[in-house]
Image (tube, rainbow, N blue to C red; front, side, top):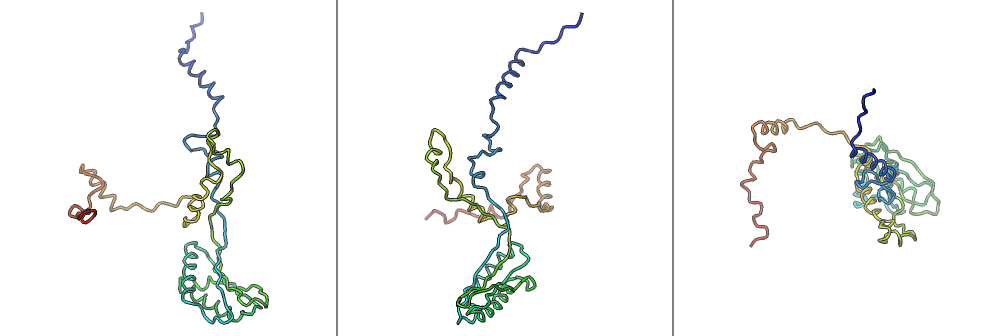
Length: 242
């Protein structure tokens, strides 16, 4: 005779049957924890797009303006700071040609180059170019430009007709434009757009601080340590009192 086969407990069979039935009904398209983003999520509907952009700054040039104003030099300094943050490799100065103010524009371009160098842009990275302008253009601008990695959001401000149904209690969905402004603000504020795609490498640990923490731990004291002098300072002095 064959030995009797071991029977599975009834509870295990019921559990397996229940999991099988539920598995056929589960919709894996959404995840309540947020690990999987659904189509109504604002990060899916209004994603932050990262691509190469051209940052520009136009310097207005009048026919009788021989030099840059102090205010305009300050604007050029700010533009040079953006150039440094973007870690760009070339700054273009584009000068109008064949225009009524071509002579004045050439002088402004030289001064703009000096202002850029004074603001930290290496002179060897400055490339002077020209663009055709009509003879009737008396105030053709000098343009500063460089390529950078930029972040932006497309499509903000859209209000499709079905929005009236999307926010109704029956569907419990967010309206189409929800979250777009927040995404756009984040894209405008981030210094390095690549940080949104790839993490930066971690810096080395502070060996001195690590020794303090481990030493306190071995002594059985507070590992975080104490800041000397704070116990003698009354932080709330003069705050909210008479």
